Length: 527
Image 1 (spheres, rainbow, N blue to C red):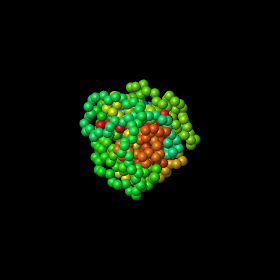
Image 2 (cartoon, rainbow, N blue to C red):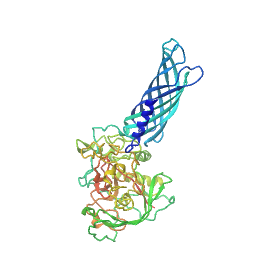
Image 3 (tube, rainbow, N blue to C red):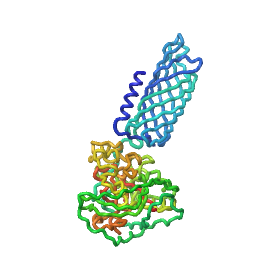
Image 4 (cartoon, rainbow, N blue to C red):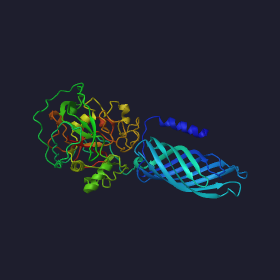
């Protein structure tokens, strides 16, 4: 028992040291060495409580459902005169159901069957075999994506009934965050190169967003709005913002209080933001000229759109993405970004759980999703404008370098980016956000508006066309980007980006019909 207590103490110390990440996920294998004990009960049984050693191997069919095979060994004392020492081998298989599989603290239930083999000096015990059934549960606590602490309890139903209790570790591999595949891996976005977050894109007219109105605190009326069609963006407002010389600091924006809401039909979790003005851009960068912007009320999704949400859209509408129609998705091979014919949102060439943000979707695909969501939810959805996105990312226009923080050294707690787990040469070895590719949405600390992954995880498509010099001519009221351009804006940086690309003011773009393994999107809802 001293060994068990020592193991538990070390495990608890490790559990609370450093940042915690990890999850149970579809396709994941695991190995679990454990130590514990058996307590036997029942009339006629002759075995005493004894320590036991266990090794389990598991596989997850889905995020919730898995199977595990195990082998236990124990040496116990017997009350029989002829058999003072009895060796017990126990083997079996169990089905597991994991609750909250995307979290760090994952409770589970187990039920199984198997057999015992007892071996002792006398013929009474030697080679005695019997079957059993068991049920129970346990909990896994992930220290990181490659190690979890584990505690289990089982009730063994057999001739020699027993309670089994164990402590140990689970070592997962494969699945959501397994070893990086060498085939094609994602690239760090570099503004202005014409790639994933770069300034290239076909000319595809943007939808005309509806007029901004004050946000509704309750569910909007049930009238079905027309599904948005592709029309040229409206002319810029006559109220042009005067050119503002660079300033040393942005003026503090007015205090804005967001409200969390849930779409009663689509179950989309949103943050409702009232109308406000702020200073957009970066006064230290001439290409990001600081200028005043005033926005009407809008709501923005709390999380990036997940594979699960996108799959519902595809299955409901029989939609085929641009990557599936036009030769694949851009990934990185041998340090260069190339079109990978095998990569699509279904398989971007690295494993994703259903809660990971969807990638390998073009701007056109994102538009199709918002049109479907508008129709099915009876509300008007679209992509956010750059001005809306930046205001939300900066927690209401505050001077936040990254969404939620100004601290470079603390970024791994707020964002998934190219850190020590990243497989690219530009990685930052000083930080560990827990993932080498995408992470399930909501894994990191949200910003001041309660929005997750505004910096990092996946870069996000904007509604706007992109133009380098747009800030110099941007209207003050509800800017919606230029009326035409060579691509659409992308914001936020991604899991394969360097830290500077995660800045809340950083701008880049990509071609409208192209798909990339590090670009996804979130949505806005109009009042």
